[in-house]
Image (cartoon, rainbow, N blue to C red; front, side, top):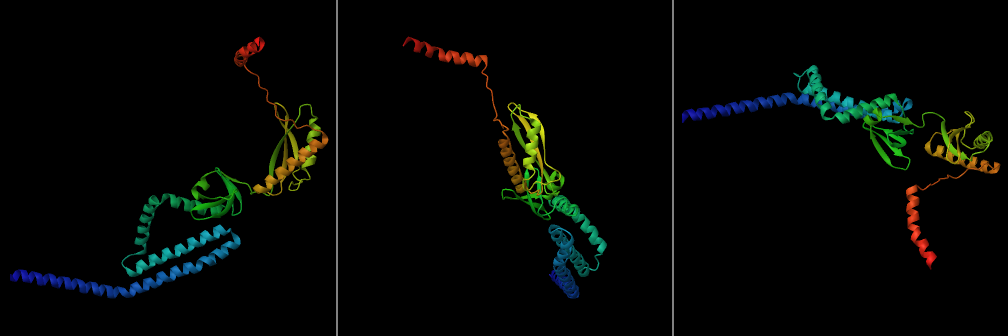
Length: 305
């Protein structure tokens, strides 16, 4: 019994010593914890204060999307640095090199776990630096066409021509074929029109070009032109080529409509015929035989009445 009692008192003394050591460690670490929290708060707060400054300065030279994303990354970088400094202050035995090596391992693991997110982030940063298009440009990526509203760290936001909002992952945008409709100040459109066989083609071309030239929205240089495009079944196909002063989708459609109307009116005034499509249907021998057998009894009945 005395041995058991002695063992119990020994365990109590060890537990008390452990608690005392823990308390001393906590009391000793409290100043470091307080300093670490202050450093972390200062760097996080500095990041929040720095963000609008960076966004405003970058916005003067780059696109709004670029300034917005870069300011967020700068603020996040300051927060990460604050977290690393706070850990080294609380745990002096931890060296910055150890933190960086640990961060490398964590980043590799995060890379596998968040592959798509990091891929879209990297693609978004590359798009912002390369700037193949900007906010307000009209582009087509795959089957999606519309106006670019913004580029975020994850996706490119597009407002389609019929008013829908489409979010395309940046990785898809970066690796796919991009058609930027507003990249250049002018854009060429083609208007197809047909004239009847036997028409004086040189005269028809001159009439079409003269009709297209004064249409609002058509630039003088390069000048409009018309070419013989094809020989159809019922008409000779002409193609009127004009360059639009405004490359936005709705404006090019308006110019197309105006040029088509002007050319048709000019053809009508000059007596140039725009023929309708003629389709000839010739029944096969089997169809003729079937039709003859179907109408034969009816013809006999009509003759006997």
